[in-house]
Image (cartoon, rainbow, N blue to C red; front, side, top):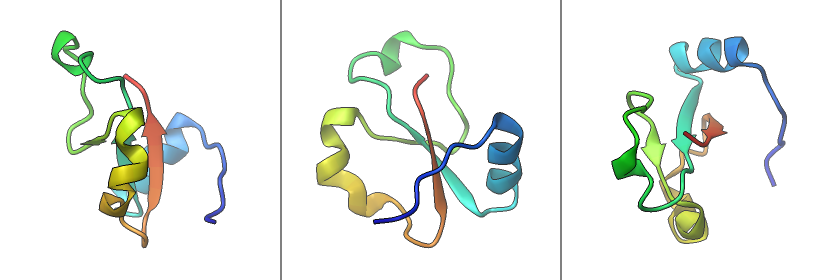
Length: 68
C-alpha cells in the first residue's frame, strides 16, 4: 500500500503545480450539480465508486484527495 500522509494546502499546490500530484474530488453523488466550486482538472469519483474506479488514479503521482 502507498504511503499516506497529510500535507497542507501550500504543499498540495506546489505538488500539483509541479505535476507531481493530481486532485481527487470525493464529494458525494448528486452534490456536484449543486456546487459552484470545482478545482480545474480534478478527477471526480464519488466515495462509493472509488473501489471500482481506483485504476483511473495514476500510480506515478501523489493523489491529493478533498471533498468540495
